Length: 319
Image (cartoon, helix red, strand yellow):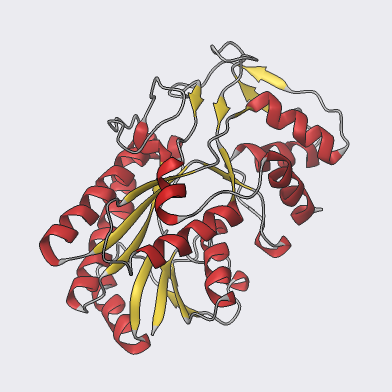
């Protein structure tokens, strides 16, 4: 009996793997290791595989049978919004093709529980202060589109052959649960600022003229360890017979502006650095914050950490 975690060698996936290991689960990680790090995984079984490859269904089936896989947490995906605009076909191939292969292998081998790593990018640019899961999804880039189609795939599989699934729509993930699991990719605000400080550059901020209290974009930042715990809560939820909902926002319900994050980084690092304010990026919504009442009421999950803990843990992990 084991849990298969796709993308388990990545930043978020490795936190999920460690929590599963800490509660005594046998874990099998499937990853192409294009960005993931094997040293994050401890004694988890490692399978090197690109989910969108021609041999993926057969290989996944072999793995599921050999290791007695009973559930899957699916995180493997391309996830750079800008890159998805430039290379949409690659995002559909990897994110949708890979998930279709995974679901095919699950169906053929009687594996019926799936926790799917979705994204707040499915919402697009909502004009409400806090988005609920019932809001119409209108993604504005191929990355968000592929995550929404992934949710549709899971729902179709549920109708076709009884898949039990939970979609977790992540908001802005940051922090570190353990120092060796730091976010090493320089793709999100906090590691981008840290990288600029290391290189002696002023961090860039895109836009200071939004209709927000301080003019910068507001986002809902969730600690990666809290997010990882949400995956375990969702996995346990799939064992229950009464499952009213299948999609859950994962955030704190509290927004922080880019300038507030910058100020917190200044406090934690003790560095009073300048910033380089540049024009807005196309497609950045002014405000994106989660309504988290559904996940709190249904899964009993609630974020334990705020912005201070996020920045402190992220800085400690690289210091």
